[in-house]
Image 1 (cartoon, helix red, strand yellow):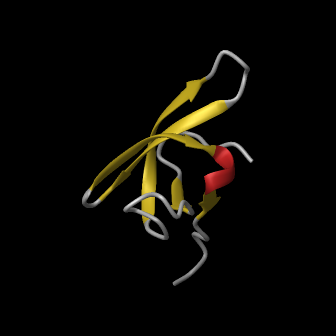
Image 2 (cartoon, helix red, strand yellow):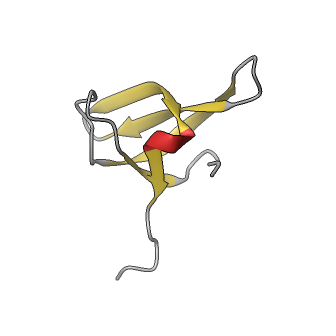
Image 3 (cartoon, helix red, strand yellow):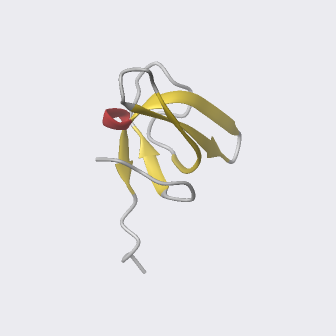
Length: 63
């Protein structure tokens, strides 16, 4: 799955201090292999170089 800037996502990375937190994609970067990596901003900071398989979309339909 790919994401765009301003998408709300949840990070799943055991090695990150932001594991399990919801954040916003602030930048999309394409690698030389054609894959995308992302910069995700959280309330307490940001994580850069995040691969798409470490992110899941936030369900916006929850009220």
